[in-house]
Length: 191
Image 1 (cartoon, helix red, strand yellow):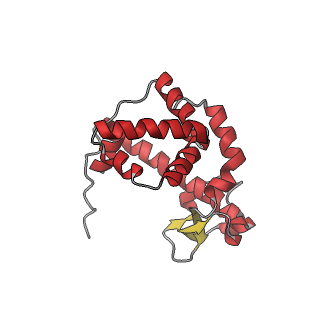
Image 2 (spheres, helix red, strand yellow; image 1 turned 180 degrees about the vertical axis):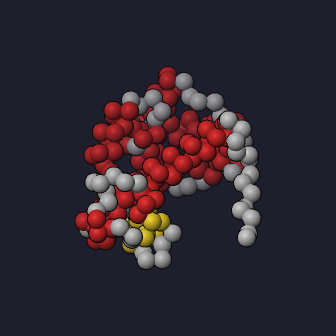
Image 3 (cartoon, rainbow, N blue to C red; image 1 turned 120 degrees about the vertical axis):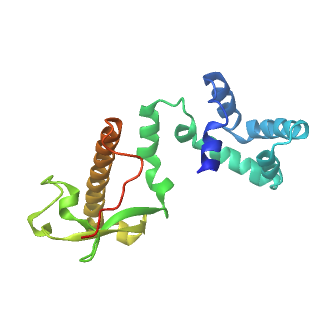
């Protein structure tokens, strides 16, 4: 947690012109070659461990990784308009998610999640689902199991579960702000 906090908060955000300059340097191989030369010169004058590690890679891999990073600008550039980011994701989601494990709700009679936990939206819950229980399982995106109608329905149920958990978290945050919840929850007393 501390390392993540440090990585996220140690550097101030880039200004728009700095961001544009960086992304223009990684858009094609010719620009990347110039950018790498500048990085090597910078590495000689500074002692940046992550930069030194990157520069130890073979040159062709450095070029390929920077060009690949440039193609993902709509995802990583904080100044990319949300409409462009969503269009990029709609167009390339299948490629980006291929093989990535995605959480699904899977029917399991002994599972910890009940239909009642998912809410009462009739578009998600059918009469035949009453009393069913589920568990969360990781399934690789793009596999046969992922594309079935059953797994698509499970993803809808999983989204409902996430909405329920987020609502619960918002409620607990509001109760905390009102002073009705402490930092730690004491376990219920056994009777």
